[in-house]
Length: 69
Image (cartoon, rainbow, N blue to C red; front, side, top):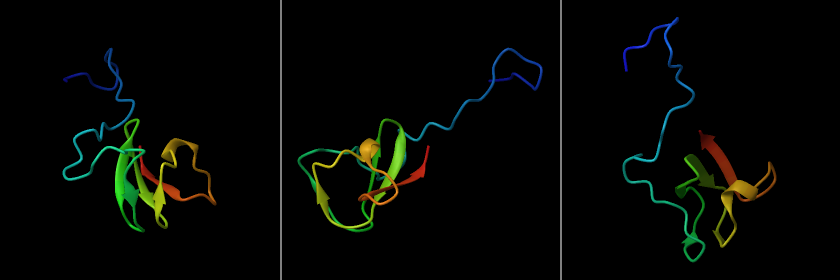
């Protein structure tokens, strides 16, 4: 994309869907502390073991920590 500061296009965010080796989140997978997943285009990391807890519903004190958008 060749659109400069005054061009039509503006970069909104980095797409991480192709983050090498990082799986998409699955409700039926058990994750351990340190496991990373992609959910909704966002990279999350588990703070402790979990299964079935949706990363997008996690707050500061919940199991998933947002790593990057």
